[in-house]
Length: 212
Image 1: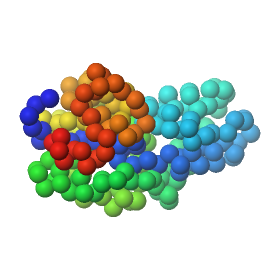
Image 2: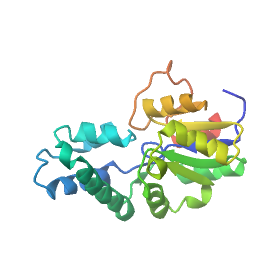
Image 3: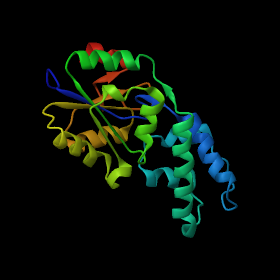
Image 4: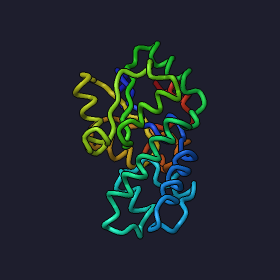
C-alpha cells in the first residue's frame, strides 16, 4: 500500500452501518404479501447475503421463486427494503462520525460505493445525518454496473489519484482489486477473509485513524 492516500471509498452495509434487522423485516413483509413464497426469511440468511449483488441475494434467499414471478417479486422486495431503510434505517457502527470527522480534518475525500438499490444511500444519509462528510456516492441501482465499475467511475469522476476502498466481504476485496484500488478489510462486518487475503484490516472504524 502507498504511504498516503487522497481519498477513502467506503462500502455501506457491514462497513458503515448494519441494517439487517430492518431489511429482514422488509423481506418477510414482502413474503407475507404473496402466495407463492412459503419459507420465512431469517436474520441469519439476510446477513449471509448482505452486500452481495442483487442477483445473488434473490437466488440465495428465494431459491424456489417461480421464474415468471422473479421480476415482480424482486420489485416488491425492493420497495419494502427501501421503505424499511428510510423509516427504520440501521445501526451505525461505533465511532463512525468521529472517524469521518478525523479523516476529513486530515484532508481525505470521502465516498460511498455500494451494491444497493437507488435511494438506499440517500436513506443512510437521511437516518445518519452524515451526508456532509461525503463528497459523492455510487451504487448498483444507478446503472446496474458491478461494484468494480462503480469504484472506477468514482475514481475517474472525482479525479482521485490515490484512493483506498474499505469493505467487509470477499466481494468488496474482489471489486477493489478489479478496480486497481488498495483494500482495507473491516473485520467487524459480515464477511470473513484471512490475513493473507487482506493484510490491511481494521477491527473498528476508529482504527482508520491509526492506519491512515
